[in-house]
Length: 284
Image (cartoon, rainbow, N blue to C red; front, side, top):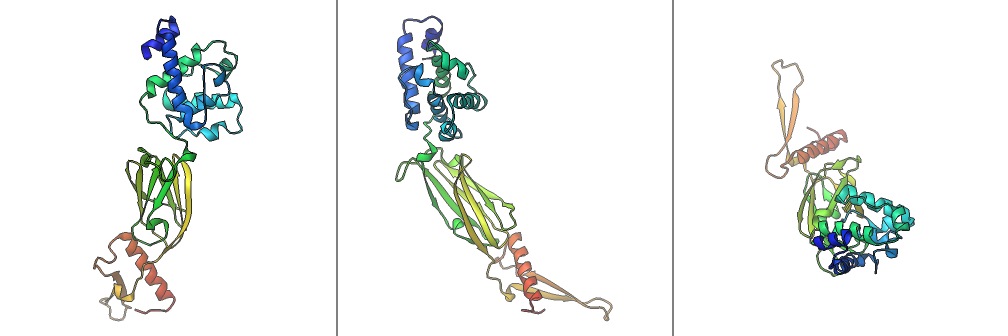
C-alpha cells in the first residue's frame, strides 16, 4: 500500500483508486470502536473526530472522549495533530484551516497513509470507557504494618469479555499513607493483568488509587493496623556501668525468631513498646 499511496499522491497511478479504497477501509476499521465513521477523505474529516479516533485507535494514552467533548473542530484537530506528532512521530502536514477549506482529498489521504505505514499491524486500542477491570486481593481491603499487601488487576474488553493483551503494562497504582507520603509499590505485569505489592509502614487510613493509562479507575480508602505485638516478643537487658552509683541502661530488642523479620516491623515494634511504656501499661 505504501507504493500505491505514493502513486496516488504524486501521479494518480493506475492503482491509485484501489489504494485509496484500501486505505479508507483501514481507517474505517480503526475508528469504528469510537463510534466514528467515514465514507470519504473529505467532508467526513472536517469535524476532527475521525482524526481523533485514528490516534486513539493506536495510542491508549490519548483519550478520545476528553478530546472531542465540548471541543470545536479546530480544537480537536489541533490537539490531535500535536499529539500524533509529539508522541507517535506522525508529521504535521495539515492545519485545521486546511481541512476546513480543502477541495481535494489527497492531503488527508496522505496524512492517513502515515498512520498506515506506522501502525498497519498495531493492536486495536479500545475506548477506555468500554473496558472492564477485575480487581482482587487483600491489599485493597486492609493490612498490617510491615506485612506484605497485594492485589491484582485484570483488563478485559468488556464485562465477561476477553483479556486485553497489553492491559497489564498500562496499569499503575499509588498508595498513600496517613502521613500523606507515597509508599513504594512493586509491580509485576503479565499480559492483560498486573499484580501490585506494597508494605505499609504506618498504622491508620491509607488511600489506594489504581490507574489505567494515567486515568484513575479505582480510588479506595483502607485501614492498616499494627501487628499483634506482645511483650514476650521483646528481649530486655540491663547494662550496668563500672560506676555502681550510676544508673543502669535498659536495652530492648525484638526476638529474632522470624516473626518480625524486616526493618519496618522492627521499627513498628519499638514504637508500639514505647507507647505502652509511656501509657504505663508495661514496665521494664
